[in-house]
Structures are given as structure tokens and as C-alpha cells.
Length: 245
Image (tube, rainbow, N blue to C red; front, top):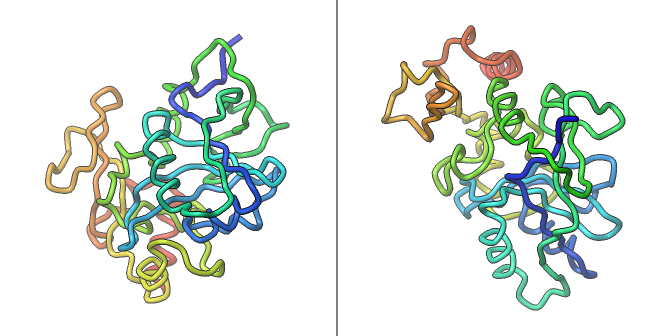
């Protein structure tokens, strides 16, 4: 049997009576409304609205589990601890659970970004590793994640296509980077988009990451220069709707 564990992911547990209020004032999604059957993709931004860490939130009772890049887990925990101050919240690794993914697990929650990504859940690790398969599938859909693809303090959150992938709430109140993110949304000013192009057509000036194993270059391009025919359908539709507003 093929394993479903994403070994490149780790889990942080945020617990304590002020766990959710702490995260509510930091993240782009509404944490107070988080439920166990509906995970949420979110981010911790810079004050200017640029992506620092992106991750998926899961509810476990009153606790919040953060499904994040394993390579960035300690840095994320450290950053959250800096914001904690005297709040009654505990930030710790949750090593008893792992992140799992499959395209054929309809009894599990869908990935909160896009249904076509497949099913995702938390459980003890199995012996396999689905990380490479999921990565290839995700990038085939034009969906980016992590410091290596989004860049840290390089790309504005809405330029990563976060609104189209359900990565931001506009009615939740203040959070780090909220002012610029909301301004871009309400003024319809998302002028650049993160996209994948064939590596042979890479533009180093616009490149965020080169992926030789998949023959792709992740780049930030101005919207008016994009050819809708080369974009994933979900993004082409979103850009068309934006232009019509």
C-alpha cells in the first residue's frame, strides 16, 4: 500500500485558554470560527502584508494545530512565541501526529485551498512518503506554498493568489499586515500574480524559485502580461473577474 504521509510537513500545537485569541490577532483567517471538519489555509505576514509563513490550521477542541513546513516549524514557533508575550498559550511541536494526503480518501476533509488538490488529514505517520507526489500534483495546479516558493518577506499575500485559494478573511478584524492586504482588495489593486512557467522560458528578474526536477520556474508577473491560456483555470477565471470589476 502506498503511504500517505507528507514527511516534509510538521505540526505545532497551540494550546491554553488564550490560544485562539493569540492567533486571531496575527493570522489572515478567522481562527475563532475554526471547526474540526473545516481546516483553513492562512499565513503570518509582515506588517507590510508580505508572506512570512503559510500553513493550514486544524481545530482539536479548543486547541489549534498548525500544519506547516517541517523545515520552517522551529522558526514559526519562535516567531509566534515572540508575539505571545504574557498570553496564556503554549506553543509546542506535536510529534504524535503527521499530515496525510490522498486523491482517493473521500471520507477525509478536502484541502481548504482547492478541491482538486485532494484530501488531507492528520493522523499518526505511516511508513510511506507522499511528499513528492503531492508536490508535483499541487504545482500542476499552479498552487504554491512554503518559503522556497512564496519567498519570505518578498511577495505580498494577495499576489500569491491567496484570496482565490481562501487564504484571507476580510471581516475578522485586525491582524499583522491587514491594512495593506485590505487596501489591495478593496481597491482591486492586485497588479502582480505568482505563476509557474516552463523553466526554458524563465525570466530570472521575476523568478522566485527554479524547480529543475519539474521543469518549472515560479515567477511574479504583472497581470496585464499574463496569457489566460497558460494559466490554471481557477486563476484565469479569477483574473478575468477582477478585470471586469
